[in-house]
Image (cartoon, rainbow, N blue to C red; front, side, top):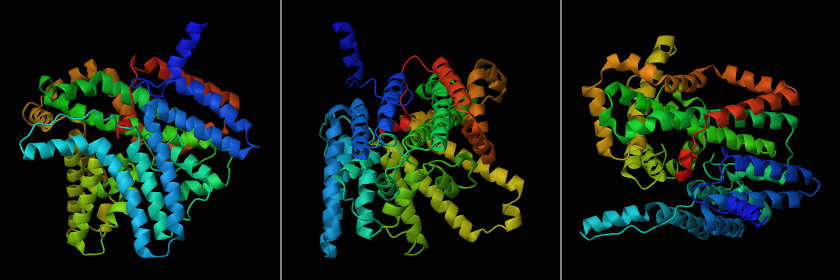
Length: 492
């Protein structure tokens, strides 16, 4: 009996190699137990909220151990700073409160994500040795610090009233579905829902289950399979493969990243629906984009709009002329690249996209095509292929560990392509090709198809919904890798 108890305690305790992720059996069991308790407390809204907070705090503990106290500390500081800010009338004092919040949050990001990189760069300048400190990065720190900053800034701008309930604000900031990898949910969208004490309707639950199923298929059946069986091999040693295989590896990673990240977003939005809360979409078929600008209107929408509202606009936006607008956009994307982590590769990726946006906007001003030509199917297809190709090049920098690896990949593609290996590639990697085609086909299919599938599932009886859910879970279990594959964006 003691042995069983010890095994259960070890399973529930923090383990850096075993976080509580949406695609694990432990999460499924614990979430079902939590959901039963949560729904049984609808007559006691405060107790129900406390239960949700406790589950969220435990969920974060399983990912970051004692770093959970950082999250709780931000809850306290935000709540107090928000109340103080709303009472102040002096603009200088109000700006000071905003500055304190930004310093706290950005200071944490600098310490946990960038200190070793900055210290190493400084040590190189002054020609001294530097041994990197062992700093454990709290999971999802970028996401909850962004939510914290937007809360205080929105109060300063008069777009939001300070939250009067510490319980409500703690629920908002710790709410587990978007906690580790987004979407970046804003207080002005979430707090009114919390105040309404919502209950999930049957339609919301059905829609949530459908999103969870699609997210699991994207993550486990497509992203993890492509990664473990092909993409990782290419990026680990690109010189061993032909240029064609390297190109397929770059395309494969682009599909993998989309399915991994949008799969998490789908599951996060679906889980929130099961609890009665609705988030905005975080992806809108980004590979259908006709330009770099449109791509960023479709990819990681919650982050791109956050960067626009809280970085690009404060930098001056487009209010100070075209040249300054292009510079502001470039700087925003560079900072957005660095947001992903302390790596020169992320900085290059951000600068690359910043340059693409500036070039596209300047070309659009001086080279105007007639509307009939812009809307022509062949022109739209060409724009989509060109934009996708540019995105693939950018994500090669995003994935590669170094510029040397990027150089090897592009050298193979440009000098050792060997198109004749295409059939051998398809035969040798048939399941990989099928997974990539499935990921692209599902992505590029008309939105009416996915909306229709969702409506069809919502309209089914509970029995048939359960049968389909069980079928998808069985497929996921049969496909998943032997080792747990974390979501890519957990490290950001």
